[in-house]
Length: 269
Ligand code: NAD
Image 1: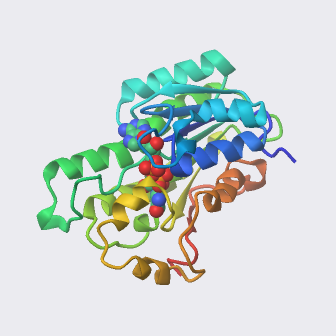
Image 2 (image 1 turned 90 degrees about the horizontal axis):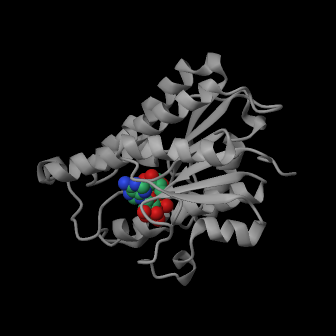
Image 3 (image 1 turned 120 degrees about the vertical axis):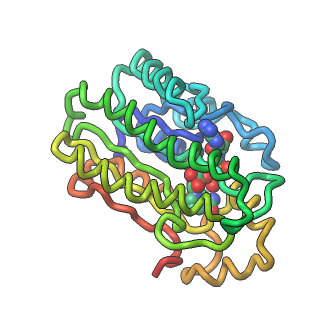
C-alpha cells in the first residue's frame, strides 16, 4: 500500500503547514524526501512540533530517507543547487511539490489594488509565481534526462495554488494575481510536457489552519464569515490536503494532467 514507494520527491516550503503535512504524508507512502525551505523548521511558530526539522521527523517516524536543502524559491540559483543536491544524493527526481508561498505578511495590511505597495506585489509574485516558473524549469530539465519510473510516468509536478487562483478574494490582489498565474501555468506545463510523460497538476486549497492562515484571518472582521463559506463546515486542516497530493503524485493519476483541483470543503461550488 506504499503508493509512492521508491519515488524521490522534492517539497518546497516543507518546514510548516501544508508543505510539512505533504512531506510527512509522502514519507508514510514510502517516498524519499528532499525538504526545501528557507530554514529547516518553523521555530517562530507557536507549536513546539514545528521546532523540529521536517527531515529529522521523517527519519525518526518512518525510518525514511530525507534531507534538507536550504532554498529560497524565488531564486533560480537556489533551484539549481536543490536539483544538483537531490540528484547527487538520490540519483533522480520523480515528484516536485511547488508549495512554498506567502500571503499577507505579518505586519502588513490587506490591500485592494490602489492601496498595494509595489514591493508587496513584487515579493508576492516572486515567491508565489516566479517560484513555480523556476521550480518547473529546473526540475523538468532534470526529468527529461531520466527514464520513466518503473510502472509509472516520467515525472509529477504538483503546484499548490489556492481557491484564489480560481475566484477572487477580498483585499489581497497580489496574492490572487500570483495564484491566477499558477493556475494557468499549470495548464500550460501539463500541455507542453504531456508527450514526455511529465504530469503537472495543481491543488487549490480552501482556508486551511496554518501560519499563513493566522496572518490572513488576523485582518478579517469576522472569522465565522470564512467558516460559513466552506459548505462542508469548518476550516481545513493541513492533513485534508495530503490525500489529493499523494493521489496526484501516484500512478493512479496517470490520465490526469493540467488540472486545478479544488480541495476546499466546497468553497468554490
Ligand atoms: P505556511 O506559512 O505555514 O508555510 C509556508 C512555508 O513556505 C514556510 O515554511 C515558509 O518558510 C516557506 N517559504 C516562504 N517563503 C519562502 C521562500 N522564498 N523560499 C522557500 N520557502 C519559503 O503556509 P501554508 O498555509 O502551509 O502555505 C503553503 C502553500 O499553501 C502556499 O503556497 C499558500 O499560498 C497555499 N495555500 C494556503 C492556504 C491556507 O489557508 N493556509 C490556502 C490556499 C493555499
